[in-house]
Image (cartoon, one colour):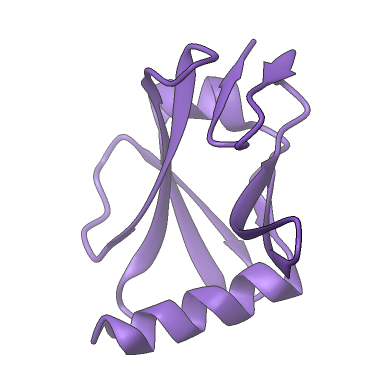
Length: 108
């Protein structure tokens, strides 16, 4: 399962509005090769659900994850920080054995 915090939900709603997206645009979380630790998180809006997607719903937000990325993301919580130490989405991933300083890439 992939979950989100209340802060992440609020920021997702705000971003949808800023980008002119409707509630039909779900949050797609995926993993791609790259970054300083080997794997990078991708976070986008997507209104199309693929047959191969796993769909999670948390706090009334649908989260789409493709099957390949799901192996890396099970148990992950998406959070948002707006503090002095950095602003942006953060992935709290129990599968990551190492993360980079910016928090955008990881290794398993």
